[in-house]
Amino acid sequence: MIVFDRVSKNFGDLPVLRDINLTVSAGEVISLIGPSGSGKSTLLRCVNHLERIESGSITVDGDLIGYRRVGNLAHELPEKLIARQRARIAMVFQNFNLFGHKTALENVMEAPVHVLRIPRKEAEEQAVKLLTRVGLSDKMNNYPRMLSGGQQQRVAIARALAMKPKVILFDEPTSALDPELVGEVLDVMRDLASDGMTMMVVTHEMSFAREVCHRIAFMEGGRIVECGKPAEVLDSPAFERTRAFLSRVQ
Image (cartoon, rainbow, N blue to C red; front, side, top):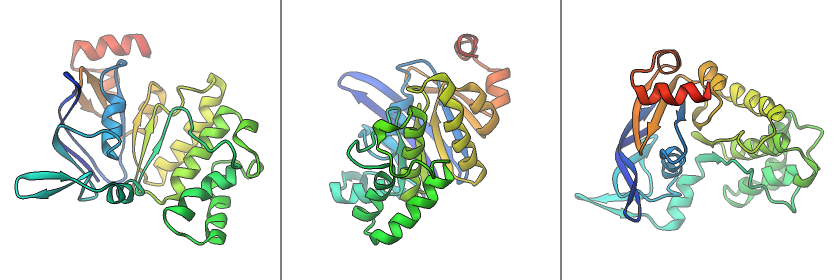
């Protein structure tokens, strides 16, 4: 479903991704772990071309993201075509990014109506189903300021699902939440995983990574140091740098 082929990315003179090779299968859930500044969130943002890559390529379901090839050259796509690609690659951020002047229901309806051109009535019916799925059937007419952080994040997940994505990217979705609210968001993500949604998750929730993810990739210095099944990486890491990191977070 997602293929990173020798992906590199710089911020000015600073390399932040170095020759990343990774394949994520359809229905697979993979966690990216590692210290701050290791490139996890940047790698995620490259998947939907929120960050441009310097070299290499990223494909999602066979489509080259952000570029078209002409011979040996890659030309960046027009913004309209990039937006069309992003419509099938949902992203859930740390800080929810909900429209404060719209209710939970309206937040979930917004993109299907204005991006996918779904009729308003159909979009509303879908939004009701999705908010019910994430346990917010009684909060549909509430504005974000009336919701807890965990509830806002669940609205954000419902909003992502409303676009019927092929992939959902989660960038530390629980890091802005009070500890007692983390579980309700992880429960929704577990449900998505059990339904076969392809997901990439930047997280520090090692219990979630162990229980739900098919593989864990540990990143350091813009590289994937090791990648394997949760038990392999968490219990028997191959590299000292991975062991040192896990000794502080587990």
